[in-house]
Figure 1 (cartoon, rainbow, N blue to C red):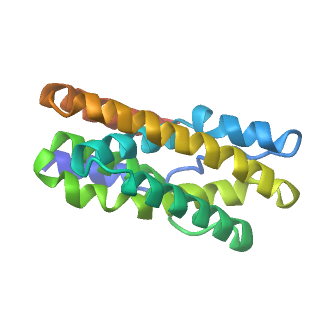
Figure 2: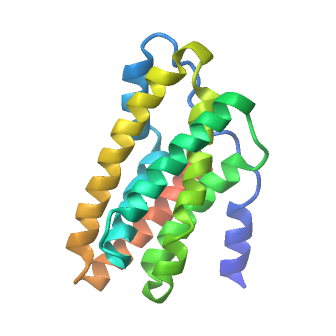
Length: 181
């Protein structure tokens, strides 16, 4: 019951995690955003780790990256969407639970591109209209690199179930930090 209550608290509406103001140097801002936005950093690393642990292919990271860019384009066109922040936070919880529950990893990993759509949507909303393409080029490039780093970490974690649990706990702690922020 306590776990269900804690999960319900995490899903309550939280303030936007967006980092507006990408006008001065949109390419640089796009390159730095996935590294400075804890929510994006953790989702990308977690997805890369799950890809290595579940399928050992790059299909999941590539689908995640494509969904993130599609979301950015939709956010650019249509603006904010209800529940975006909850989906972003949900991605961290799902990635953490997948690492903590190996028997559910494949199913939970399949949800990550959907969550990435909302991460991208936030990017599209926060990018200024005139800066969208440069900002997107930056965040897609670094997002791909972070997915690759996560995949490499996942390859190292394949034989270490205890370290997988530690990584899952770290993702859950990161979700709590994002929620508190």
